[in-house]
Amino acid sequence: MNDFKRQPLPLPNGQDKVLLHSCCAPCSGEVMEAMVASGIDFTIFFYNPNIHPLKEYELRKNENIRFAEQFGVPFIDADYDRDNWFERAKGMEHEPERGIRCTMCFDMRFERTALYAHEHGFPVISSSLGISRWKDMNQINDCGHRAASRYPGLSYWDYNWRKGGGSARMIEISKRENFYQQEYCGCVYSLRDSNNHRVSLGRERIKLGVLFYGQEKV
Ligand code: SF4
Image (cartoon, rainbow, N blue to C red):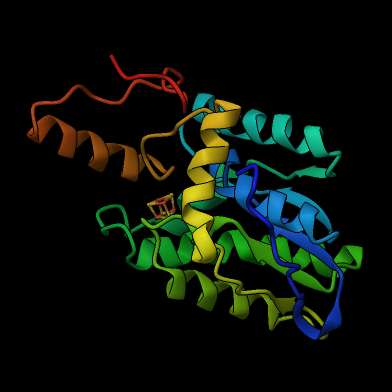
């Protein structure tokens, strides 16, 4: 990290202000450091009603707040309207990851991000969601563009945060900051499926709140 020189990031349409949807500290750490290095004026928008249970939601959110405070980056703590999320997920309980339930989940989070951006004068939205290799970047970008297209003058910045070593720096920053390390995507169905997979391999079920980057697994 120390001798790494960041290149300035150009925003779409010459804009310089972003509302950054963040899913968690590990995914947004690299994105935030890249934006800070480019002098971009940005605000974190934490809207993730998919995360279950509440204990896990609070863990992820508080780690993100802790990191945002280090940079003095404004942090919008949006609703945890999980009833709406479950309502929209009805009938999709057994869909696989990267399937239609995830499209719904990204749509819901981006729709609220785009609405907030529209109401509060942000010309650009983006997200940390796509930096994870577990995610389908095209699926996420489609949802982001769809949400932004609802409002005139609003764009979705589909920058590929993985490139140029971004994925590796995401892990480096997470270790440096000892971020909480979540072990499933977020919703109750991903928790169920991750646990089923682990049990099938003879591994223990996920324990919430115990694993942090930089710690040796015992
Ligand atoms: S697996 Fe992840 S992206 Fe898909 S619905 Fe669950 S929380 Fe949302």
